[in-house]
Length: 279
Image (cartoon, rainbow, N blue to C red):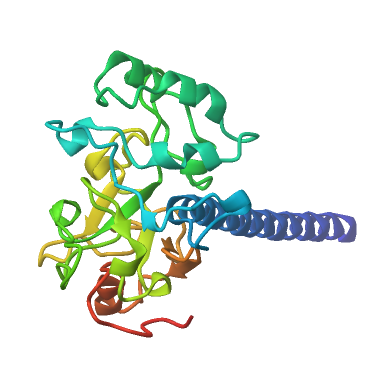
């Protein structure tokens, strides 16, 4: 009898140890995936914003001082039938993890998203555009998607707002807009106080396609989904919140407890707010 009791005790201890090990592995994996997703956002923000913004780069080459347009602009073509801002950052992407060189030869920036050549190119998976935690499963032959979208401001029409060269900018305008770049000097709230790219599992779209697939405004309407959460406009991969990149290249995690009004203000470039979050 005592031998049976000892065996049972040993089995229980083994099961407990196994359970603790599984829990530890799951937590470690989640933490690792969180870091990878933050690094993805950081790389995208650095390439998109060129946030260092010196007057001239190495050998006197002038660097951009603006956020690129949210689409590859083609006159007369709707934003959702253009190519996305991702095309403009491809040359700076880590080629060891992404087939950049091959992609650049396949993409035709003079043609819309619907062109056959671009449809073929869109099927190539970009690891940089994917959150490793619960990565969306896409049927074979379908366009590869992105887990990260540019922030256009507030509301579904935010990316269409025009920012004048002088004078006040629209209060609901964000860093990305469909038809033109956004100069750094028009981001009067500060690069460190303005959202650039957000992590979302809400209807992920093709990374190569312009429009809401890769650029969105935060929906602040009365019947909108929560801004952050597993079923929210942003987030959906990590239970503790959603990662966002800022125009200065920094990345921060916001939880579902984040004050909604603060997040909405951070989505705009010229709301007049200062020091919403620590530098």
